[in-house]
Image 1 (cartoon, rainbow, N blue to C red):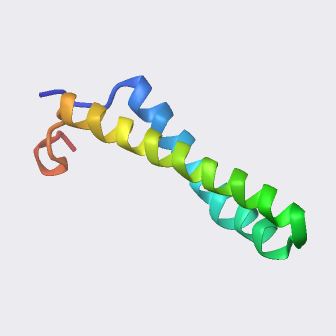
Image 2 (image 1 turned 135 degrees about the horizontal axis):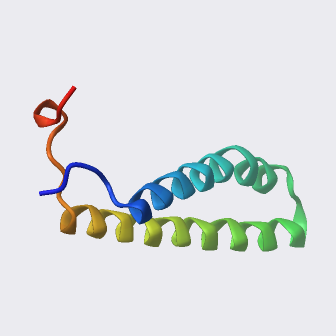
Length: 77
């Protein structure tokens, strides 16, 4: 059991945080404001991005299960 997360886990965490915020704030507004053929294209990219985020979250979960970290209460103050 490790005392801290790996560098890769930390990078993946913050990458996902930025991607999810972008997807919720920017991409959703673009999809709602578009019309016609443009809306179909934006929705395609919006859905594809959501699948990429899902895949990265699944990868993060697998990495988290492989590199167990001590509970916060067990760590030194």
